[in-house]
Length: 187
Image 1 (cartoon, rainbow, N blue to C red):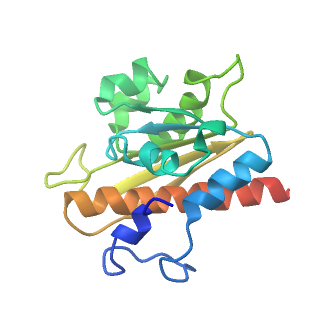
Image 2: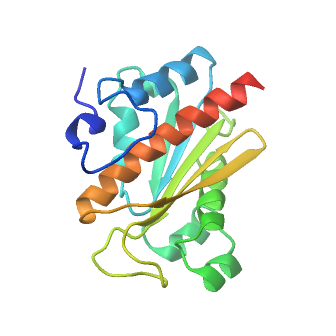
């Protein structure tokens, strides 16, 4: 199996609560859960620039559940492609929890297959650095997850250089979608 992103990030770069070392492949678990339940996933990315979609696609069989991904790096594309409210973007900028939620919810409808929107949407928006953006310092990241009628934003304050922040975001995003799928399916 291809090397997971978690295997390429040292323990000093990211602290993950409850994780038992880097041996568990959470991404494979997400793909397996979605496959078993005939659910689909769509990804909207900004600061991760396609890394999150690539992480899901790394898993053999991902084509059964991953509809696709949109890299909306420019703020205007968050509105025109993903349907994020222009007033929200004007008021708060692209780095905001409500923007992450709107991206995750919006991408579900943007990437339908056979007329069916994705069951799960996940998004990343934030500041990888080295400079601040929208009044937010490097390491400020929001991950949005939308499943069913439930949407949440995970607020991350990450430390490291630009590449480290992007890689940590991918790991935390995969873990967030894994947890939310488990919670949603246990209801």
